[in-house]
Image 1 (spheres, rainbow, N blue to C red):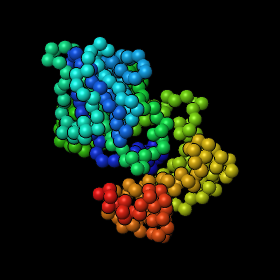
Image 2 (cartoon, rainbow, N blue to C red):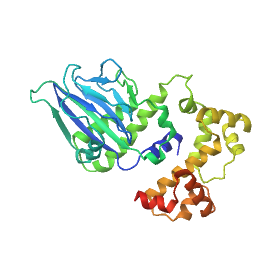
Image 3 (cartoon, rainbow, N blue to C red):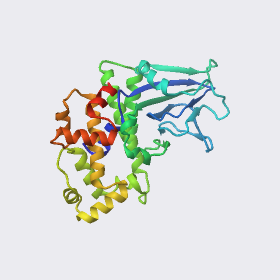
Image 4 (tube, one colour):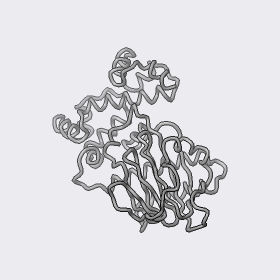
Amino acid sequence: MDVLSAIVAALRTGRPRSARVAWSAPWHQQFAPVPGAVGVQVLLQGPCWLIAANAKPMPLAVGDVLFSHGGHGYALADSPASPPIGPACGPEDIKTLDQYINHVVDYGSEAAGPVTVTLCGAYELDSSRTHPLLNALPPLAHLPVHLGRHAELRTAVDLLGSELESPRLGVDAIVPALLDVVLLYVLRAWFDEQPTQATGWIAALHDPATVAALHAMHRDPARPWTVAALAARSGLSRAAFARRFTALIGQPPMSYLTWWRMSTAAGLLQESDAPLHAIAAKVGYTSEFAFANAFKREFGTAPGRYRTRQS
């Protein structure tokens, strides 16, 4: 598994949710911050303004994508002058999106004004194992997709919108898969647009040596990696690799490897009935006792108790 795919797998828990929403002007919908989720909004049709704290209202163009997590919330409206039409959408609204996964939801005025159509997707996060990459992302990011930019993302959005508007056989499998694709394309597009002089995780994902080591850890966490072996994958000396990795990722290679192993183990404990010795082996521990100690240091509880608590 490449590093970005592995990170998305670690970020998300449960089933992603989506809806195709039609708004009749005048409308103004507030979206509350949702620390336990990642949200994506795509403008498919009509007038729309982004209204965010400490920023001037900004008009969006058809195809534009918004990516959000936590932050201070934001609002969308047909016009900055339109008053809010109801309470802010929050965590409970994300949970109820399942009932709309194959439907268009109509909101707004009865005055039959201009119609705006948005496509929204929500991904719940496991707060106990949130990847540090998320800290490198802004709480609210705007990706202009019009004028030929990010063609792959545009195609994925078109496919998702079509499935939600006219569901057919297989839609329950296709929509979650497309939501994963949209999220990956959004993250890829955002990282591609970052300046080359960026630091931290942004710089790490643009650095071939660091990415090579991350790929190796993510693809085979069970392998008995050493700093020397990871340095060989990166094409650097042991000392140079350790310095570069620590400077960009914020922790030494073996510390990150342990965190990734424990995060992977936590996901396996939640999502499978595999015995502890099998999970220990999958994340590089030949001793179940050693694995349990490492897991408890990371999560503050034994693996068995963690599994019971998460079920």
